[in-house]
Length: 112
Image (cartoon, rainbow, N blue to C red; front, top):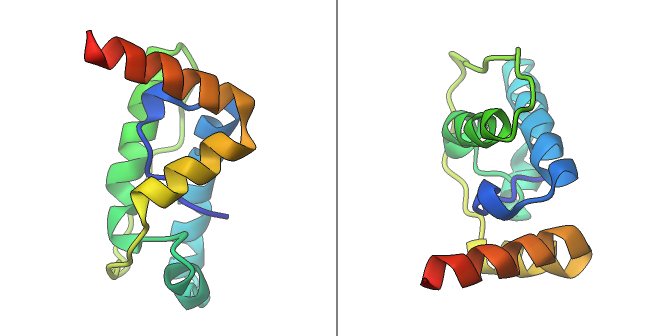
């Protein structure tokens, strides 16, 4: 499990929808008192960004015409973590050809 925290515009469907689900899973873990320190130390979770990230993913999902019926909120304290964005982006595009292609197109169109 991880938060990619990359621009959802260029993420493939699988990673976009999966990260959305992982936002819910992380919040549930935190609310249930399960330890998430390993994720934080490993650079795969920044609890302070969970709600904002969820909402950004949902916005992109809706723009693509996907359904969404799972709002996310919590009263739990969400501590700050650190996710190295450039490293994570490189990891994602090295693992997923669809995300790599999406990133290239997004970057090309952004320069115009």
